[in-house]
Image (cartoon, rainbow, N blue to C red):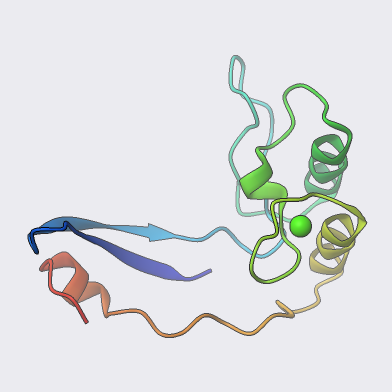
Amino acid sequence: MVTYGVVVQFGNGSLLKSALTTTARWGDLTGPAIEGAQGPPPDGEVDFLNLTGCVDRFQGVSGAPPLEWADLHPGVPNGLVDFNDIGSVVDAFRGFAYPFPLPDPCPSPRAAEDGLPG
Ligand SMILES: [Ca+2]
C-alpha cells in the first residue's frame, strides 16, 4: 500500500489543497458484501472473495467490483479485465510481491498537505 497526496493546479496557477489517499493492498479489490452497495470496497484481505470479484468483473456480473479496482494488470491499467488480471489476483493471493515497477516518486505528503507542488 502506498499513500499519495493529490494537488490540483488550475490553468490560472492556483492550487487546490490536497487530500491524502492510500492504495489498496496488492490484489485486494473487494471485501464482504454491504447491503445496497455496488461492489463492496477493499477490506485489507486478499482472499477467494477477491478472485471471484475479478472473475465477476471479467464476466460483467452485476454487483462486481468496478473496472478500476479489478484492472490489476499491467502496472499501468489498460482498461480491460482479462485472464492477466485474474492471474494477478491469484499471484497476490499466493503471496507474490507486486510485480510491476513503482511509479515515479510523488511529492511528500507534507508538501501535498500544504498545497505545494514538488
Ligand atoms: Ca487489465
